[in-house]
Image (cartoon, rainbow, N blue to C red):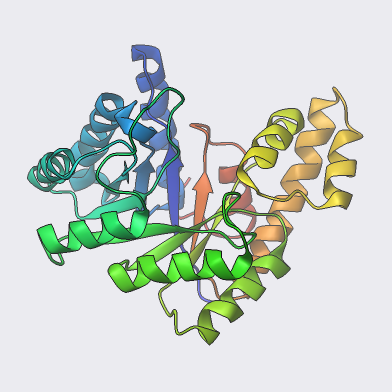
Length: 285
């Protein structure tokens, strides 16, 4: 029997009081699956920095009670060495010990990329500045980053982040387990031995998912795309099917001995809680 993987959950920072209240309720419900940490996204160029910081403060203030870490995302596009220094100093002062270091996409209209071009440069800078204070997570792309010229180039870029000091990685979401297995094999062949946690995206809206997947390079297998399209406006049947699919999908990942499961929550609890309950990953009601 494969050991139970650790669980982590990702949120986007709310921009309204109502959104923050909702996220507080979501976090309270997700305690049932005993997440190791909650991560919060960070807009490229610092476009959501204040909201991210507020969400991180809230999570961290609860951590003594919940034991759940806060893990802010840091995007390097459009930033300077000084702004990153100031930001990580703020996180250190809050007791944060985990970061998700990303390159990020350059927002429309931004004229300069900033002091860092790639995530490996950001990882290296954080290591030089703070030593081993932070556990640094980076992104991995089993199906290749959409802006990469080839799978080999993408793997080389990933290895640069590992060599710069990354401790572990979280993948872009995917629905093809063979792509993940093949990626792990290629990492092993290239002496990349950090834990690589699969990212799991719930399926709540097919049109929205298809649009997002086309933009970020995450493949929806042809059979799955056709099956999802068949439901049209039958939301109840869509949810029932995707719940079964994602339960089996997650069970198969656990069977591979994955180090963790990272859920892209979209600030919702469904179907994450149900999947975890079905798989025996819930720790309390």
